[in-house]
Image 1 (cartoon, rainbow, N blue to C red):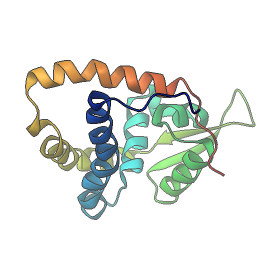
Image 2: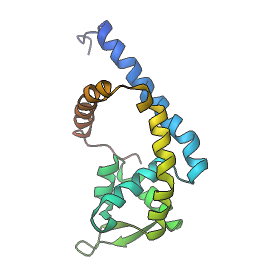
Image 3: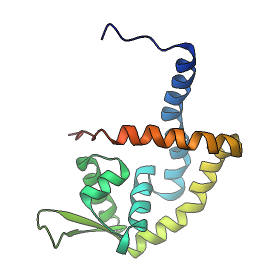
Length: 158
């Protein structure tokens, strides 16, 4: 590891704000989201993923991959959402060892109610500070970084 070059000034000027955003943005979104909706950002992301899935159903492992959560973390989130009646957990018909998560009608209602506030916070925290050109330029760069990170499978957090 000793032969790695230190970040040059341009790399450091990119890296430092990127790390700051990774820390500050989730906090900024979460500070109002939970009190306003009763959902965490993670809950919201799971509900969105299920709302976009065919029949509002995903295998737990696919839901974990879609939301970039470990299997143990997604299991805890789905169990919590199921206790609140927002998601239903069902055994997978094709594989009795696996489970599916299904968005309930109550979950869809909660998601739809949370969306306007979430959208307003995302716009205020991010898009109100960017030009159309910033978005066109940064979008593909961020997508490439996300894809590179997602190529490395997450480890279980147990």
